[in-house]
Amino acid sequence: MLEKLESLYQEALGALDAISGGDALRDWELKYFGKKGGVTELVRSVGALPKEERAAFGKRANEVKTALEAAYAEREKLVGAMELAKDLEEGEVDVTLPGRPRATGGLHPATQTLREYARIWAKMGFQVYRSREVEDDDTNFQLLNFPPHHPARDMQDTFHTTKPNVLLRTHTSPGQIRAMRELGENGTKPIRVILPGMVYRYEQITARSEVQFNQVEGLAIGRNITMTDLKGTIAQFAREFYGADAAVRFRASYFPFTEPSMEVDVECFLCGGQGCRVCKYAGWLEISGAGMVHPVVLENGGYDPAVWSGFAFGMGPERATMLKHGITDIRYFWGNDLRFLEQF
Ligand code: DAH
Image (cartoon, rainbow, N blue to C red; front, side, top):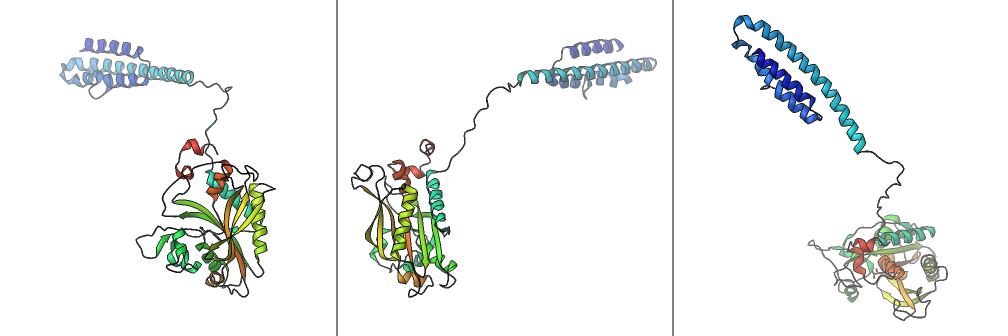
């Protein structure tokens, strides 16, 4: 047994010398000192020896154990140092190399236009008022002077929910009612707000029409607001957004909630009014519906139309973005194609 102990000792020492990694070190420990390790078992079998040999064997076994433990500790230190050196070498960093640029995201082109709108209108004193996207029939139509079977409803095909009278707003105009009722303090306070947000229409999706898009509604209520204010304000917006010498024109039109109503065109900024593909050779681009708030709508908002008046307008930021950048298909906006989005 003593001989066996000596040879195990030599074997273990030799094995230890060859070790260069942490895993092998742990295997070694298990092999010799684990529950079923060589040294452990040999020591355990001391009981099988004749009595008079036991003391000598035990003494030597302890020496071997201590020696191996010391050798192990030393090897462990060495292996640690070797692994650290290897790590440092492999992970060497050249701090003089230029940094790698990180790809950054950007704002969606529609968001960029919305922000530009908000910036321009803020300069003229219009604050942002956020209204709901899920509306009731009353607010989306009725209170805006669309009677139940009025043909003007056909202009805006509607997504209805399974709940009667609950629908996705087809335009931002119902926000006019909510703004007047919330901010007007029973028809006693003037208002100047824009109402940006998503609207929904149950329409065939084509290059020119989507089932969802943004609108920016504008509403000004005061005691002496006239059509002249509306025209001047819109013209100022056009100069800010389309360029200092953008000319605008106003065409009579019809909306149930404004009287009189009009549509606003800006001179085509691509051809300067000469006529081109983008303006369809008209020389003008439509940028907004607008008008004087209908007396019925003022009343529905809590204002006395004999004392108060106001103007309203509605713009389409995606349309404006398309015109500005020559985008020919509105479906790109919600198509999530990075090749499109990365251009802005
Ligand atoms: N709500 C109209 C639409 O979606 C746009 C509009 C026209 C809004 C005239 C207005 C307005 O405030 O005065 O077609």
